[in-house]
Length: 356
Image (cartoon, rainbow, N blue to C red):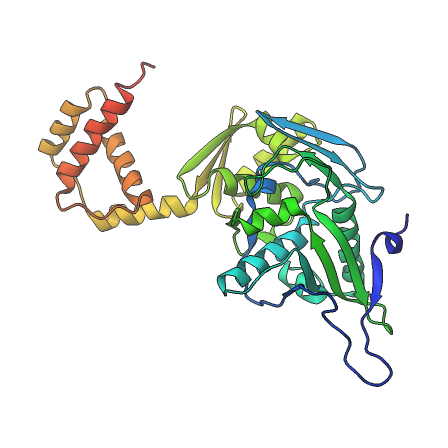
């Protein structure tokens, strides 16, 4: 099946009488026309591997399981939808959330200007790039999913594609794509309609490699704004959807950790354990510490040791500052008493430190 058979063209020009074309022939279409929308991504596909992290055609069936969650994917002859194809859905989600914020209604059926998609997703705008956009729509519409992953508190009980239907409008003279018209699946639209989205770093589309984008998504979903989050290498590979060997995947993660350019997070990798640390959280903790200007005296340290025997009180001081910063708590009138109180509660909850 050719691309033209998969994604059909619709004329974009007006009639010979000089009238403008009918731009909105259907009853309720959402026009994506917000120029400064913040990047939004749906949480379900951030957590689970709905997309191939490769630039080569992948026509293998896949099944993913993690705990009670499962996902089966059947690609079309055009291949599995990729992490780069997902850019179109991120654009759509970003537009809809921005429209919601502005008090505008949203709809599953959307009109997207092709150039706006390319510019928003940091792509070139040459003729070939418009054809690649049509290829991406074909994969999004053709890839079929079956899963128990819930969106909007509802499980989809039949096979679906993330994009129910897609068409492109071309300039009748140049044949260049001008508009894309898509209808989002119920499953995907529910996640947007129920605000099940997270904001991505503005430079997300500058991440060059598919694995970098996928690892960032997972970190953003699970670590978020907390100080740190850890995961085993094998589970990270499974959640990423990587089809590489564990050895090769290990090499990719080590490279990401060493290059230190992943957005929002530091990546630490040792003994097949990957730890993500939020740069924003670390900076917030440092700023809070500077703002407090609190250095406990010997009497305060003595009181802290009494209520939390066995613990390193300086380590507890660090944990208290983290808690203060990440919980947005107001600066206490008596930092010394607040710190000792924190130590007491920490000991009540955790007991003494484990023996090495």
